[in-house]
Length: 253
Image (cartoon, rainbow, N blue to C red):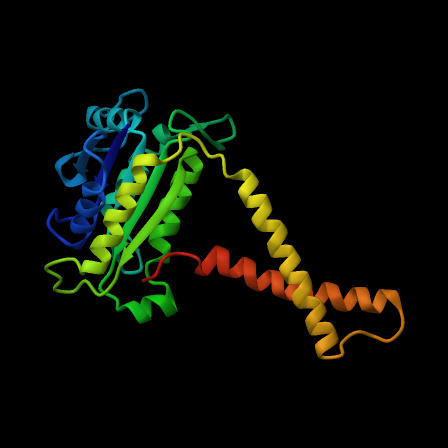
């Protein structure tokens, strides 16, 4: 198995690189590793049938790898420009376009990725406001379009003047690097997700009934009134949970 680290920062000795190094250090020596520093590759978009040879080289490295570790800092609440530029230039290689311009997974389908970002923002502020969320969303959107499966995401806050990684964060990076050694070759967690969905619905139904009876919101007569009460409460709870998992779920500390 090969693990490819892709560093999309303007420096190769900053906080982002330190996190990437810690993750890669956790990968067993029996597996091949390589780190690509995008600043060393003067890539540019393909011009029609004229392919950029630098992108050819990077694309080949990605094709030969089983897992990608995508590391880029967060600037101004978004993904660092170098990594975003790389995604933009790779857009016609990462996916297959149909006749309407729709995108479909292609050659990179079922590979895996772990994403890393960091920011100057403090841990509490990032936890409340989600400064780094947009960086993760950008990475996730590109990878999802390419059919690449997410393993995890790591974030480091309060990086202003940082010289060394906090020991706790270093250990977390090492742990996830070790987990990359046994990453599954395909996404076989569908059954797990359906089981989680079942228990989520069962839990919400129980809470809904508890609210109905606890606050005496169940009409004494009439099936449809009881039904309407249940649906409204259930809808509110479901909306809150979906909001959490689609907006607030990203790692913030």
